Image 1 (cartoon, rainbow, N blue to C red):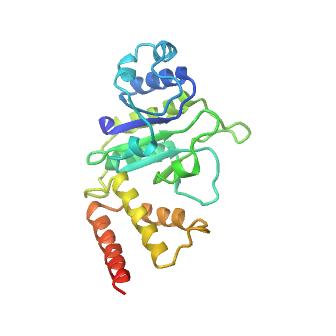
Image 2 (cartoon, rainbow, N blue to C red):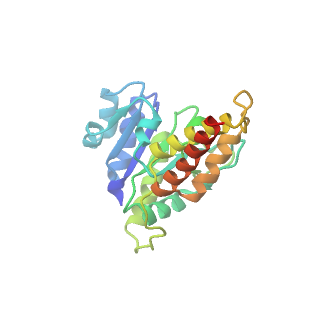
Image 3 (cartoon, one colour):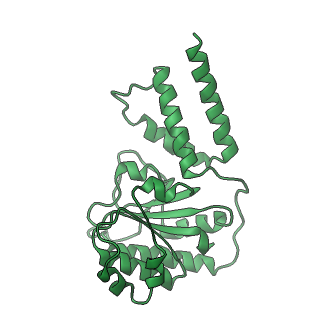
Length: 239
């Protein structure tokens, strides 16, 4: 289970937070760290704050975009402490850990953490099937980045060492990259048939993402949907 989970830090500004996050990961048995466009890395402060977890830093994958970091993932969780205009499935760290244990044997899973000051953008959160909110005091609910990583890593460790849970679904899940390709195809076709106005899209694509995320599409289902979209395109072009 733990080997299939990756921690993704997006646009981290302070290298010490990267090191502290690596330490939090290693203490709980996590080793897959992805860094999306970090401001300063590698850096001596990251190594100092890792305090013995330098192997996690040395193995860290540095990429330019979140899409690259989660391309081969089939289940993506985004952390957020703010409410959004469109409600998204929101779960606790413990519920997140349970879902991961249910599905981790056959899937790559990412837990995404945003910038220290502003968190994840709406666009980035729309690439996540679930949003995680860590229970905290409503007056001051902002956790340090490494502390947030530690909370999630701890819950994963606890559920990892608990009794087995039943696997809910045995299938070949669609990857994030495959889902993004489907969403781009869907948007293109909706514009073509004039169902979606690109000048005033409102929140249509975000709502459709939420709908399809709930369905937990597998590869075959995505191929069927894209086949339907392809047939619509062909029919429109032949008129």
